[in-house]
Length: 213
Ligand code: PRT
Ligand code: ZN
Image 1 (tube, rainbow, N blue to C red):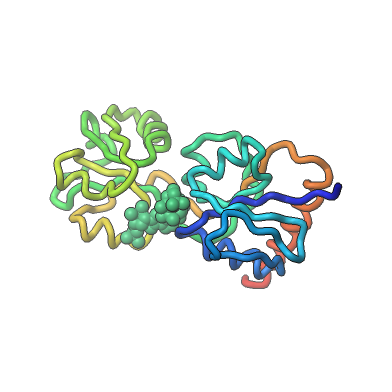
Image 2 (cartoon, helix red, strand yellow):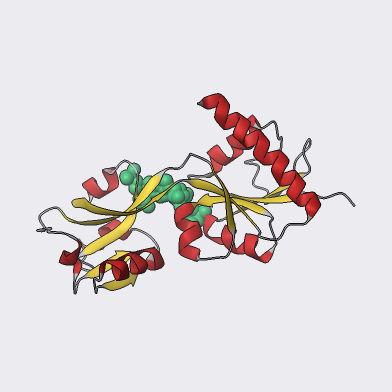
């Protein structure tokens, strides 16, 4: 039986359109946006699974998928032992600490003894530990930016791209702790046939990227 690469993409969100476009530019055709959870390419030995981004590193680790596209922020936060095989250059953003605009800020030590709301407790926890700051981390899954105004936390640590969400919530960005972009991740142990398909795919991705530069 010939090999087919299983590739996990975000079903619907900030990575979806660019992920699809990348494969399209690589000349790999498949149905996208039809509401189905799986689609088989008509001209490359690959099938695509459409999932929530947070689940993708786990599916790649478990071997449900061979490859996946996620933000580096999600790959690092989940801590799954998957390989980053290529940086894709889209969905760029940063993970930053922000505080209410009127707060005195004299550096990261200002967070000592404070409450910080975030959806990235591992990335934040590691960063604070490295800086020797002791703070209370409150994990919340969404709408992190409203935490200070409702009295839940004195600071937030969240994804920023334009900065307008922070601004409209009366927050100022004071420290960037991580920079992220979309990455292609792979299961560490792929058999020879799949590895050959990955090489073929990577060659096309690099050609597409080189043509843009
Ligand atoms: O449903 P699913 O779980 O799959 O998606 P999701 O809602 O968890 O993720 P999604 O689609 O919002 O983001 C997917 C990935 O895109 C993230 O993991 C990041 O790697 C990347 N990315 C790039 C962003 C942003 N830019 C971004 N601006 N992810 C989130 N945001 C949010 C941020 O959380 C904040 O609420 O946008 C707001 C800030 O944007 P600005 O422009 O106002 O600064
Ligand atoms: Zn998600």
